[in-house]
Amino acid sequence: MFNDEKLRNLYKNQRVAVFLDIQNLYYSARDAYNRKVNFEKVLSLVLNDRILLRAIAYLVKLQGVDQKGFINTLKHIGYQVRVKEPKIFKSTDEAGNIWTTIKADWDMGIAMDAISLAEKIDVAVLVSGDGDFTDLVRYLHTKGVKVEIAAFKLTAAKELIEVADEFIDLSSFGEDVFL
Image 1 (cartoon, rainbow, N blue to C red):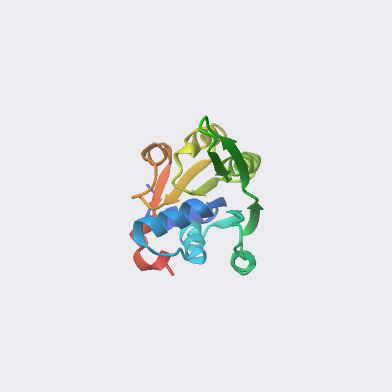
Image 2: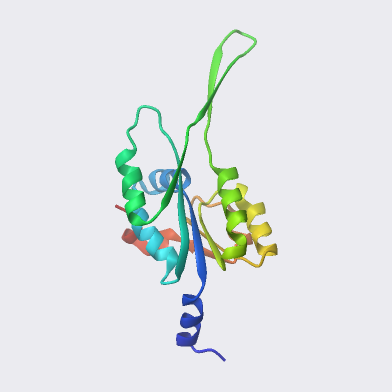
């Protein structure tokens, strides 16, 4: 039987990729706790002294907001930052009203990156509570990848928590995950 020290040493050799859904985490922290996220601390907590192969942060560009400082901070922390422009769709209803819809998410990009890295990692840490990732988790399991979900339990999709190998409730770390 393994004692705790042997298990710790075993886990320290795990090759980990972290996929950070910034919008999901940001809005979850804002809406549930009225707080901002300490992304550096989140990376440290989910990595847990294991081998980091890649940490990717996915950001949607906000119109009229200078995000250069934030992006530079994320890069300094150790994240590769991917930025996407939102898509704006305009439509008119039967009454002639013009509706604007903004579509901006990284679900497909996160899934593609996770799939492309699956052969090189032991653990994928998906920092998001978005239930749309449930099928991605199932797929990564077929490739032998352990999947950990890190999110705030209050806002995480139940089906995502259930399919994960491990759920890391970021709120359990208290003030450490907030700025």
